[in-house]
Amino acid sequence: MLKKIIIGLAIFLIIAFIAIFIGTRPSETADGAYIPSPLALKLATSPTTDFDNTVYKNPHTGNKKVLMVMTEERNMTMANGKKFSTGNHPVEMMLPALHLRNAGFEVDVVTPTGKSGKVEMWAMPEEDKHIQEFYAEFKDKIENPGKLSDFARNSLTDSTDYIAVFIPGGHGAMLGLPENEDLNKLIRWTHKNDLHMLAICHGPAALLAAGKDGIKDSFVYNGYKIASFPDAVDEQGPMIGYTPGAMPWIYGKRLNDLGVTIINEKADATCHVDRKLITGASPTAANKFGKLAAEALLNEVNK
Image (cartoon, rainbow, N blue to C red; front, side, top):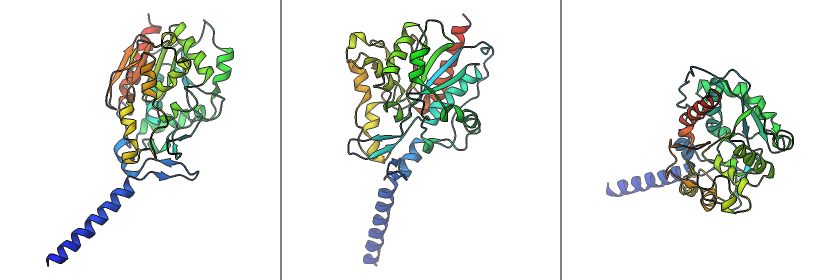
């Protein structure tokens, strides 16, 4: 009898181990990259959001717009050489854009060269009616964006229809944007003209484009405080199979070296406003972040 119990327990432990092992292994895509494991998706994504469909009493009726800068790159090569299938996070992109739309601001989309914006479709909240409907409306802008290079060449003037720049999160914000010279020009132009900068989760990584020289004193956000996705949480990604390997580089530390203080230690709903820079820590911050952004822009146009 005891022997049967031991054998049964051993079989149970083996099955449990296999289940856990498989559940924490990233899933391979058709192009050989990886999306998060079943366990990671269960822990880090949700079929719905907390979008509250805020009604803004005095929505903007003029021509002021927001420029969203998306990544056009899909795969991030991790430290071990494996590729992580990423892009911009749909909740961090769509939910704030919904608030901006409800507040009366049109959102335009650009990517560095005009290639389609990339979205982490594995994080799409499939049961969220508001996000699904808005994504269907917004999809053409994502697939047929403008060129950031053209905007930097032709539209950087003191007089503009744009009131803010928005950089959504997702690890894709670390691809092609932090070293982009046109984004460098855009960020400096935004700061010089006292426009709002909106960045959530990994979005602040793209702000490094304005600090490519590594000189702290010349970085426009030196001395600012932000909410952003913590480096320490990124380090835990391989443990649950969120990423197929360790990060290729650490963006938070680079921001710290340029004089930026990240105020949150968890990937939570923390948001922060420092002058014209509005930031949020993670997808769970997207609703609050979107409302803060919409209200700040309405206050600006209604002065």
